[in-house]
Image (cartoon, rainbow, N blue to C red; front, side, top):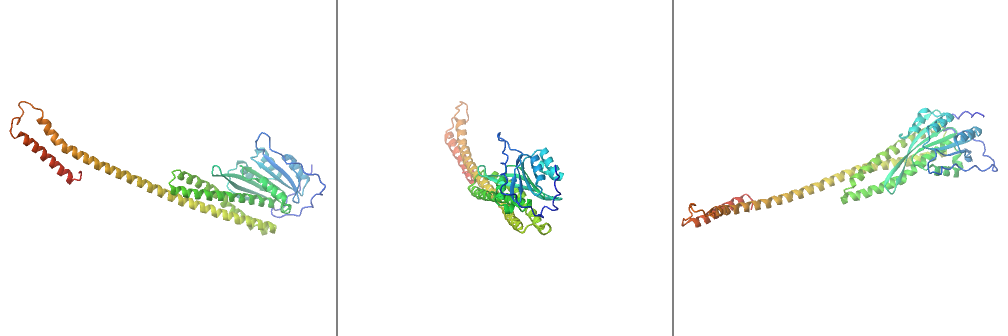
Amino acid sequence: MPERPSPRKSVWRRTPLPPPPPAASPAPPPAPQPPENGEIASVIQAVLYRDGVRVLAPATLAETFRALREQPAGMAWIGLARPTGAELHSLAAEFDLHPLAVEDAKEAHQRPKLERYGDTLFVVLRAARYLDAPEEIDFGELHVFVGPDFVITVRHGAAPDLSAVRRRMEATPELLRLGPEAVLYAILDAVVDDYVPVVSGVQNDIDEIETEVFRGDPRVSRRIYELSREMVEFQRATRPLVGMLHGLMAGFSKYGTDEELQRYLRDVADHVTHTSERVDGFRLALTEILTVNATLVTQQQNAEMRALAEAGFEQNEEIKKISAWAAILFAPTLVGTIYGMNFTRMPELHWTLGYPFAIGLMAIVCTGLYVIFKRRGWL
């Protein structure tokens, strides 16, 4: 089996490719389909291109390696989803991928970054999509290896949809023939474009939250907290992209990047900057909304406490009145009870002035108690 030629010196310096194959060449076989049991295959698609035109779609990684050796001027674009360790190690052995990059692609849960290992670029992207039904953001992770004659994408999660990127590139062969760096641009552009509906969905959520805050919805605090956490993740996905794209643009002159591709990458950088600024604004808005909501909740609690205090005060006033009248009525009741026992040898029982004295005593005691309670505000 012939050996593969030595790779190009830089991933961003494109050497001229030989002319495309004649039109009479046989049509490429259909792309491999996922298994019928519904599980996601590791190798989503592996395609060999030559001068921007698809020439072969091998079914396995081994066939892809063999075809690339036989087509030294071609470019392989291999897409994988949650690959196994054996598949990643076979790719590393074939394309001389750095072990650290392979380890990152295997473990996932990486922050967006751009690293260069010799002639190979390793790019980590955080994709996002907005789910309308639960009103939340679903994040995915994409690792991209870009070499002189290959592009390898390792996807962890449902986003992004790289099949649409592949169709777009195959529909524009003049862009695809720019090589692996053009594929990297298309992937970056797709990831950034997917941020647009997420930004729109978050803006609608914030508008709804503002309405719920002033309506006094008790569930709005939890919604603000959950959306704030999503904005933290969204910020971690978008903010590093600004530096990554500026790093790529800084190497345009050094690596001889095609001028048309430079314009495309600058456009992506502008979109990323705009998205990052919107996300920063969302975080600030949510912080302010949370502060306003806390203030409104505190005011509502204070109003409720004040109402409870007023109700308690009124209840205490009523209790005072009842207690005062009970004390006033207790005095004649006590006197009447004592003199109503009718014992034979009871003092003053046969006294002529006993009855007027008892009535007067009760009147004096009741009047005295009434004056005392009145002065103290109980009546």
